[in-house]
Structures are given as structure tokens and as C-alpha cells.
Image (tube, rainbow over the protein chains, first blue to last red):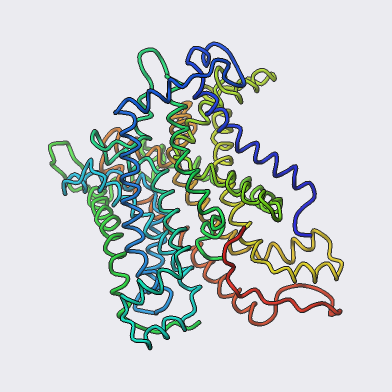
Length: 268
Length: 324
């Protein structure tokens, strides 16, 4: 009654469709460059770890991962910290301009990054943050903060208001109530919101590339360097690609039970 | 639940307001400033009024022609991927296993493409689609198709669309799945007793319950496909020729490639305005749908059936914790 006929087949085909290109990337990362170019093989016949070795030993490569993680974590912390009180306010109170403010936030989530690339470049150069992780972290706030507010608002609304009232009757001050009672209650929601901030900051490239030059180049930008005089270094490119998938795959596993609800912005 | 009017709540919202305003309002003011001026370098600017906007909206000029052509391509692209991803996402959501470890496994694999950096998505498809080293390109050519996304317009389009379907259908599927999970078991039992067909169950129970999440899905997919940049840029670089140059790619070309500030700023503003309008329409529809749903839930759960003996469905008001 719930599902449709042939569902195993449909699901199976779709999962194969999703996994096949990823498999090809992984496959390629274990091949030598001569094998990639010369023959068409479905699995590596002469498996090699040379591409991975190169990434882990060459500083200009692995520093890219560290740079990326740095601004992603910074951004996640900032987004959640400012979004929490706002989510509470939107969920519990009505105030002047609340609906307009909410729409304004939403519209920023939808604003194209390409529009902001140039002004951000000017702005962060002017205040001396250009080429620091802070520039990228703050720039990514433009779409992550609204998203975090949206998700958290859904989860805060799931907490009955009686709990607030009881806490205040018991003499809790507002900050104490917030940290001691509300935050533990919506811990899973905070996890989901953090996951989404992490994800969107991790996958974004345009702003991250525009706002960095030498010191803090993200891994995604470094990957474009694999073109050399000897042609494309496909194996190295594939290995770098595989390594960017791993952090994402790890965090999915932790939030797998909340993924669907999170994508619905806490509004199911 | 009625909300209390409390103006002090502004203090709680203030941090968000400041952070987003810093990132949104200041740059936007710069854009407005640039859009009205022209420069001959050396930081000397001249007042140009609405000149750039006139040029932008006039298809006979170079700028206007490029903008309108990329806008048309982008709209077409958005409509095509919506037409594929929404039905496919619903079908996949309906095909999800019911329980057991397979649920978690499917969810994780579905979410995987969403977590891959966008340029790596491009790289994956670049490698996968190349006729010389890619499985897809090689297989298609071996099967007799003359497939090469670097030189053929149509092949480039198909590649970009299939890539987007690969990348984002999971989002639609996950959203629909979340909607389906919130349907109480009693609804299905009632339908079974009434002898409703599979199609009737879908139309009367599952689709109405998915309404809201589908709206979110369409909104997100439309917006994100309308500002798509990285993936097609990596795969096709906007080519062959200009055939896969979408608005964002055109904008970055003008802004960071030619450093043509005035033109880029005017384009940014018009682009942003279009997004804002579409966003507002969706937002209004969405909030109205929310109100309607509340009213409906209060009166009677929406199942069409004869007034025969059936267990009264429990209204689904409790938010569901977790999905798997």
C-alpha cells in the first residue's frame, strides 16, 4: 500500500546511477596515469597509491584541506551562535517587522553567489581580511545564517512553550534557561543545522576562490592546478576529488536519521 | 500556538541582522553605486545614470544580447531539470524501503552527491563523460553514438542536465520521503478498508501530504539551478561556443574576467531582482499553503471516502522526531 510496484528495481537502478560516476572517480584515483590514458579498464590492473602519497606529502596539496576545514568550521560556529537566539525569537514572539525580516533572510539564502563575488572582493580587501579564513567564513554566512535560522526555528517550535514558562517560574534567568534547558532540548536540531552549514560551506567554491589568493587557498581551488606541461594529471585530480568526498560521507553517517527532516528545513 | 507580541525579541534577532546585513547590504550598496557609473580606470568614475540598464535590456547591443541569451538558456535549463527531477524524486521517495538497515543505507547513498563540493561534481562528470578516458563517453561511443560534450552543443547540454539530475534529484527524494514519513499508519488502513486503489492512495493521501515539502523542493531547485555556476563551468566552461553559458557564468566573465564593473553591477541588480520576485511569489504561496493546511487539519483529515465504517484517522499534528 505504501510503496509502488517494482520499487526494489527502481531504487536499485537509481542507486547504481548515483554510485557509478563516484566509482569511476575512485577507480581512476588508483590507476597510474599511463593506464588511464592508454587503455580502458573497469578496475585498476596495476593499483597504485602514488597519487594519494603525493597529496599527503606535498604541503601545497594538504594545506588546501586544512584551509578549507578552517573556514568551514569557523563559519559553522558563527552561523549557529547567531542563529540560535534569532530562531527562538522567531518561534516564540511577534515583533515589529518579523515577517519582513524572515523573508529578507530567505531572499539572501537565494541570492546568487556570482552577484556578490566582486563586491565581497572589494569589501574584504578594504577591511584587510582578504586572504584570511575569516573572509570566507563571513562571506558564507550570507546563505548559512538564514538556513540555520530556518532549521532551528522549526526545532524550537517543537518544544512546548510550557517548558519555558515553568523554567522562568522556577527563577531561571533568560541566558541560564537558554543554555541549561533549551539548548539540550534541541540538541539534535543544532546537530542538523550544523551539518547543513558545514555542507553548504564545504561545497561552495566561487566565493571561497574569489576571496583567497595564496595563504588560504581552499582545496577545491588547488585542484584546478593539475593541468601541467605534460597534460592533465588525471590520477592526481581523481585522488584529490575522492579526498574531498570523505568528510561529507563521514558527517552524513552521524546525521542519517535527521537528513530528511533537515532538508525539509525542519518543516515536515 | 499564538505568539506573544514582544518588541524586545529584536535584541535576540540583532546578531543575525548585523551579520547578514554586513554581508548583504554593504556589498549591495557597492553594486548599486557601480551600476550607475562608468570608469576609464585609475579609480576615476563618471556618472552614467541608467545607461547600463538600458544597454542590458536592449537585445541589439552586445551586453544586452549576451544577457538575454544567457537568461533564456538558464530559464530553459531550470524548467527542464524541474520537469525531470520532481517526478523522479517522487518515484524514488515512494520506492524507499520501509524498514531495516537498508533504509539507512539508502539515505546515506542518496545524500552522498549533495555533500560533494560542486567543482568536484564537475570533475567527476568531466572524467566520467570524456570519450577517451570516461566510462560513459567510452560506452556511448562504443555503442555507436557520436558523443563528445566538448565539441557538440546538444551533447554538452545533455551532460549538464544529466549531471544536475545526478547531483540534486536526491534532494527532492529526501524531501518527499520526509513528507511521506509523516503520514500516520491509520490513513493507509482506512484506505485499505475502503478498497482504494494504489493510484487513489497516491492522489488522495500521499500527494496532499507531500504538498508542502514539494513546494520547498521546487523553490530550492529552481533557485539553485537559476544561479548554477560551478558545475557547468568545470565541465564545459560555458561552451562549446556560448551554448552552456548561464547567467552566473556570464556575470563572472564580465565582472572578474573583463573587470567591467558598471556592466557587471547592472547585470547583478537585474539578476537579483528576478530572483527576489520569484522568491517572493514562492514565499507567499508557501505561507498560504501553511495556513490552509492548519485550517484543514483542524476541521477534518482530508481523505475522500464513503461514510462507511472506518477507523477515524488520527490527525497528524505531532511533529515526527527522526525519520529512519
